[in-house]
Amino acid sequence: MILPIYAFGHPVLRQKTREIEAPSDAVLKLIEDMFETMYNASGVGLAAPQIGKALRLFIVDTVQIDKEKDGIKRAFINPQMLDESGEPWDYEEGCLSIPDINGDVTRPPDIRIKYYDTAFQLHEETFTGMDARVIQHEYDHIEGILFTDLLKPLKKKRVQKKLDKIKQAKINLKYPMEFARF
Ligand code: NI
Image (cartoon, rainbow, N blue to C red; front, side, top):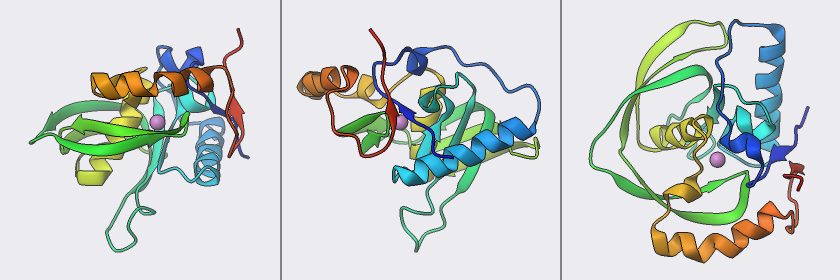
């Protein structure tokens, strides 16, 4: 089932998220719906707050980015970032909650993260490059951080009007979205 994606300005994107206590059919169904929703919007990652759930959960599929390279496709349940390291690099990010805005974000290239998979098995893994980049972006979502918070000051100023438009739902939709109500 395709779910509406919550747009910039909706309070759920800034809400404190809670852990998923145990595996359930409802959680598995939610993850399935999140994948369907992400693919429908041509995304490579999606976090639970973006579909209106304040949960520590996100999905990633970087296999789509470059078919030549081994990407990852998985759900991260109750993830915990353990370490970020290496020489920070810039990459132009975007976000399904913030359509038609892109901008360079500086992040370290190597991460170590702990998370549960859909069988509720605990993993501790390292990721690098694009896999790490997408995970960092999605991890930020469950911490209430959006990539536009991390833009350089001048760029942040430049996108402000566009952000206000999204907040007020004054945009053309490419996929179903839910907006803040004032
Ligand atoms: Ni995003």
